[in-house]
Length: 185
Figure: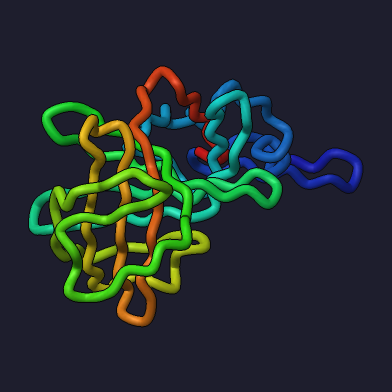
């Protein structure tokens, strides 16, 4: 121990001259922000789509056996849209918006919405993990069905959560149409 005018500085094995060096040292290390892709977006990120900044307020990870896909709830003001992302043979992205279309069981082979006919393409069940505004569905098993028009330019997605059947209208987009800004590390 060294004593200098009522200040005690302890020097011990493996320690620096003072406790204050930890607080006042300048570190060049900054946390690295993980690059985001459409398959790694997190709640709190900003997604720029169609010249509009959307905050990601919810995320749903869907799992059907070993297959995984994602739904991101994106909010701008009072406008909510969903971004769907999955890696099939290639990256597939879609933008969806909830619509009012009454559908009942058994699910029909085709649906008509605003004069356009959509044909049942696939259906199944998936276990979900919910984050952000979607935490209330975490761990649930849901049923889904996907319908597409003749040109596969628009889709109708059905999600049965047990208590309600959500219906959304969507269309495919390309990766270059999105810019993801990480909201956290």
